[in-house]
Image (cartoon, rainbow, N blue to C red; front, side, top):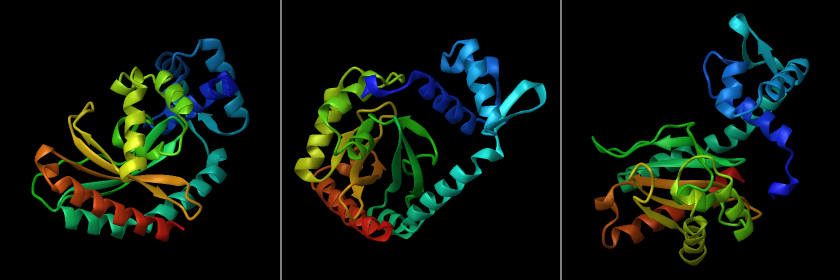
Length: 247
């Protein structure tokens, strides 16, 4: 997979992602330093994006996304609306289990949560919407990569730039994927940066392709004894509902 990618395009995507995640844009120097791109390459990419009206240059030499991306954003809005119909499913799952739940999708080498339902408890583990994590990380990564080949998973782990456990231990992801194939879910007992327990199930479309991951977030006490199996069954039911609604 890595040999079939174009470095200049990867850097362009990185710049667009960076600008999309920052308020107020960024200067060329900031982008080059943050993304480890040489100043000359960063300049040429920005000039190309300026010519396509994908970015604009404002006061203080700060670059930001421009209206030329509107057609892409419009299509993405339709894509997001496709998933928004499952919010009631997440709300019911949170009420049934007493835990926060979230729906995540894959974006290239990242995973990002796009929907969330809070726990009805006064105090509970939660997570922010729109935050990017490496695609290989945790139970969500295993669910989103449930159909990926071992070779692709190893390449994604090796190319990960965030110091997560999976970066040097692709077997963690492979074990999670195997758990999903055997049991229909992956449970991560606090083996992550946040020391949060997470249980994830893939959401598939009508053709059987993985389109999202549905996850419950909690602590050790939430998944003890028979609770893990009961919670897994609840998430699998909810994932099937999500699949029907998303088409």
